[in-house]
Length: 257
Length: 345
Image (tube, chains in turn blue, green):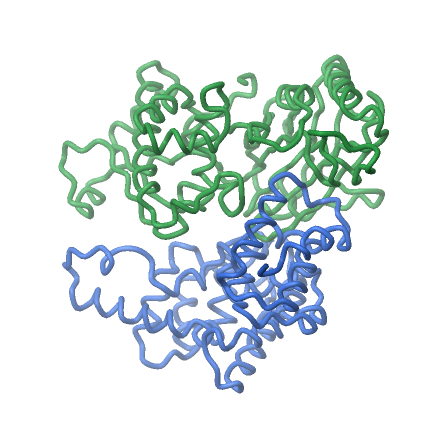
């Protein structure tokens, strides 16, 4: 089975080339992918294209950017999960496939959701052009700020993190809507659900999300309860617990006391 | 990599069972007679067999070994949980860590030696014989976890000091990986070419060069050296070693490379702004390369745990590196260069 991929070595070039333009339109992205993505027409990615377009439209309509778009991200997680699950697992298991999907179908949302990174990346690109021989490694080396939101390697990437958010609660959009995390949501999801093993176990993640929706701990206050849960789980394997059993362990720990 | 039993645990674990699992459990793929992986190792697979071929978990590769293992496990369980019949379970789960997918493929109470099968087909789950999701993702590979767990909370009457009582408490555990990409636990030597020398302004006499490009929390949480650093070795030298991977001189050189690369990584890690927060026993650090290095150095009477190894690193880095040199194995370098030998354990 073959599917389109954007090799990870191309991500730096992709971001550098597309962001240098003033107008971030999709044709720049398509032009780059025409030249550099390995596209085999056997896999139809229409489900991803469709949800990517709806997500972008919702973001534009909201008039918001960056972390203010968090509720939109929450609202569309289930749809992204459903769309991606229509595709073969073999494709989902490829970092380079997710990278392609992010560039091709989610670019519009990526640049709004990470607008700050776009600005910082552009500044860095310009610095590199203007001072190509500067000895400052901050300027000359390393990835650009936007790259990790495109590269399908981990839960920072935009479509993958929406997918993982829904999957962490069992693909249940209604649960996400009813338990909307409003206090430090980006950090909460990244550091305490998707970045740790909790995200692989809906029976653990659901009570934790519900507790945060209820308690609304600010970022600093999340740290100690998170440590307590991680310490507890160092000795517990999460595979056998029911949601109620995991909740009985997690919920009392998730407070600012 | 060391087994997780070296962690300091708040309750008594099944150490006899752990030792037997470490020694006798293996996984095999489509060439079971040729290639096997033991606890802590990676089984390499080609792309197509990964998504459609068999994977088998063996509890001993012969009836004799299976009986020896089953007896050791059951004796250990009976000795510690005699009055809690059926509380300890053997559970096997498969994980895709990037996609956060977990499938439990086996779950059975340990009551007598017959509870431990000779082999489990990892490539199917349940009556419908569905292929587990992590075995449909060759790009990501898969982690296989074999655990002895408490399957329920012990009742107040069953609880004792130092006896685990919470459901899910793991009493023994071994891990394997299955990968199509030549996964390795150590730094991958890349050729130090003229272009690399020019890029980093290196002198012609430089033989190795480690470039740590990661910063911030990634340095301490990364699960692969490739995510943190590039390690270069003079291209001619690298070619010669690849031609003679098993020669004595080649082994000595490779051990030196491991120390060189890991030493550079450690220098950067201890100066990292998040180093004070680092705790090898909790997430997101418990699966990190930093933790793997600490595991390597721990497990002795003087340095029993990864946490003790961390203290040693801070207080006596020279001694830490000496211990590391003592434990460094060739399989810590790239698997592609040093084929793993199923006979070696």
